[in-house]
Image (cartoon, rainbow, N blue to C red; front, side, top):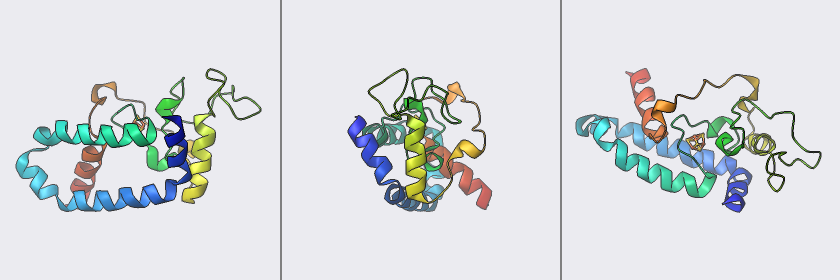
Length: 151
Ligand code: SF4
């Protein structure tokens, strides 16, 4: 829902803090996740993640979440699914040329990043989307990667 999506951007700093806490707790749970098997918990975790993120961000479960570098504005809501910044079609009122009733996702990303007091990912290139992981849990992937980096 677009109103909730805008709300999430307005509260991007608080949501980032909540995510960092969630990530901290999930990192602590890594040994348990390993015992249970990451593959086994993938599906239930993806269901929870999808429910939370679809509500707050209109998430499409791309599997490669970039919310923390796009001011909590999901770039998959751009009709062109641009993940590295806006196209040249942003209208003078800040709206999208494809969906004139919607503010440009990337203007929202800039707004959210200012609230988070950090730069958007526009300064660097996002990796191309790996479509084979669509629908998978980005949370679990992030925890798995961070846990391996620490060990
Ligand atoms: S970047 Fe991907 S995982 Fe993150 S909110 Fe958007 S669709 Fe969902």
